[in-house]
Length: 322
Image (tube, rainbow, N blue to C red; front, side, top):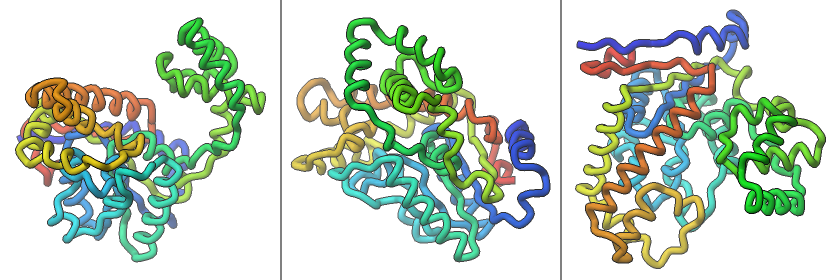
């Protein structure tokens, strides 16, 4: 039998930031995060049962009412036994963004705490996790004309030149943004242009849950090849459970931009359009989900507050919970 290995650096980082004694009177909040298909749902459910907790979803796609299979929502049985928040809250025809999530998730967490229970925040969205912890950066700083100028420069000069400019004016932001993430590079340059202050410095003025509560953040991880095998099996199960029929049920609906980005929507719609066979749609979903998991891991690695739990082959749930 394997033993889940807890890497303590995240705990050390948390104590260094907040101090060993400052959390005595703070209410507990637990985050369980990690890449898709790693096993967060089962771990969080069992933990919530043990500690009198309720689940708060930190997933950007489980908010949509019409999609359950391709978004891997917790089962109805789980949701009947343990209250789950931020699942099935909007239609696929509605936009849902980080600002809306921040409001709803914060309200849900406060509601759980008021009921003398422990919020267990669960999901794979690193951005949503960060927004909850650190607060949301005000989007009121805008210069649309300057933004369009930068977009025009990208077309003529490419990505790298703008990224080098960002490194010069805001190296901290540049460290967190990939050179090919043009949208975020432009946004950071736009903020600096308007305020003459680095966006990374402005963001430090944000206010979230961190520092106000006793927060533990557990990052669940597995061997990369094992994770990819789990992803492939999950996609196979999605098709067995009716993923094609689920996407077929979206016909006639005008999907929001955020709903269109859900892995499985475009791939299966391509099959309906006759662009390729069903097996190819499945393979595309598997490949795109593996790439998504890789991006998730990249995001989580940069946050030193996380306590990593590497699940070893043979580990059973009670060991992981312990």
